[in-house]
Image (cartoon, rainbow over all chains, first blue to last red; front, side):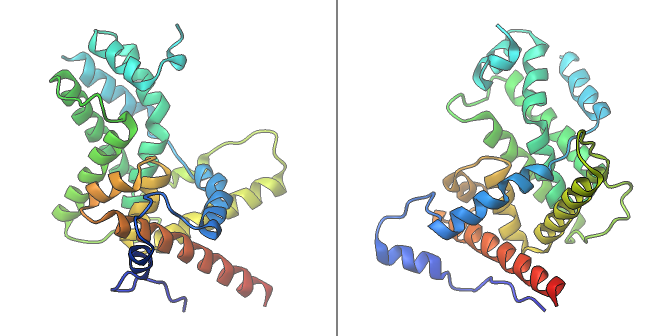
Length: 64
Length: 194
């Protein structure tokens, strides 16, 4: 079984507090590299709502 | 000027000046990211359609009432509305969604790509299916941050505000989400090799 990480204490936050001010976009190099590697696949799993739903929204807008 | 060349703020102004085309272009531009964000959280096609529709009804009501804050970016604002509606749904249902294929057809399976060999298509579909499954396996708070960051293009500060946590916590959840995805992918690769 794969054990996923969700510790009660946040070691990332602790590390950052020790470093000083936190950059809100501060993924480290390895994390950023992995994220960049999977971005294409994340974009590949996007889907869209049906035309009917879009039509309903636009009809609602026109009803004003 | 072509609608596609207008930025979101210009489209909103166009819409508020009576041109429905402004709203149509905003929807066309952002529907995929918004819908995918909802779908990955609720894992039900029909429910995602309903929440998507309700999201834009709220968007329209707010715009028409003159209550849109022009300083905020459009996509993060809409994602925030969608996220709140998803939370409202879960509160009403008082349950966590289960990964199941019993909600009708899987819309991800009907995406069509052209000029692609059968083998490439099968590999792509398998990769996407695997990634979808892995995302569903993430703890909900990590999945939430990943979805809002990637599809909603929200900053960690915006994510922190929406989810009522500190920026450090939001960033930490993103890091755990990425590390867990990587861990699961490596484990899957190892199990395939053995």
